[in-house]
View 1 (spheres, helix red, strand yellow):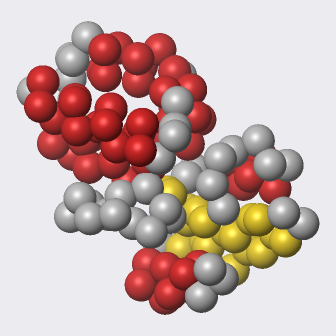
View 2: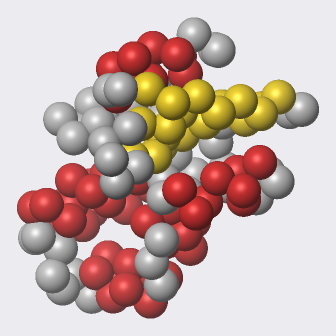
Length: 126
């Protein structure tokens, strides 16, 4: 378990993401993330994959080109510039994928039927 936690913390450091930012991205209380990462409790495989995706890595643990998964509720905060990064996606309950690109004075939101199309659209902005 310790190696998994170390990998998560190393990836967060590489992406310059705090535990508070990760919690906000997950739509959770920072205390839950703090407990799971610092006390190493209850970080199951599914949770590990979800946490990594929110940091900006694909489930296969391949660099996700900085694309981060967020909850729909974070979109307004992204537009205000209070969330680090410029490429995000969110999954709606109906399976639709929302792509969010935000850099300087540019803010674009687009809906897609799948992650691959969304990721291509996001990467095309770089």
